[in-house]
Length: 76
View 1 (cartoon, one colour):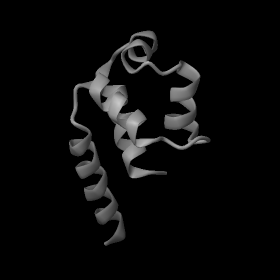
View 2: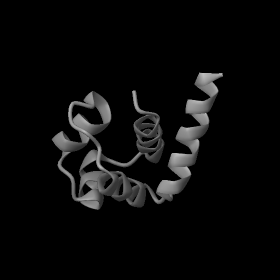
View 3: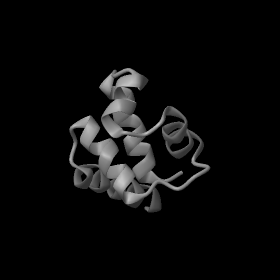
């Protein structure tokens, strides 16, 4: 699983927002978010990751840094 997707998924869970509200904020459909974040059957594009990060109120760069740290930890 992609480390950035793991970070996005964790932040979505921590946000305690409703799916409907989250979808309005991102402009993405519930099925699209599910496929990209949970099932990973379609790729998550950078602009989509940015929209999700914006909706969460977290800089995408912060999520990428966290993902890189986790990836490095698993490689040790």
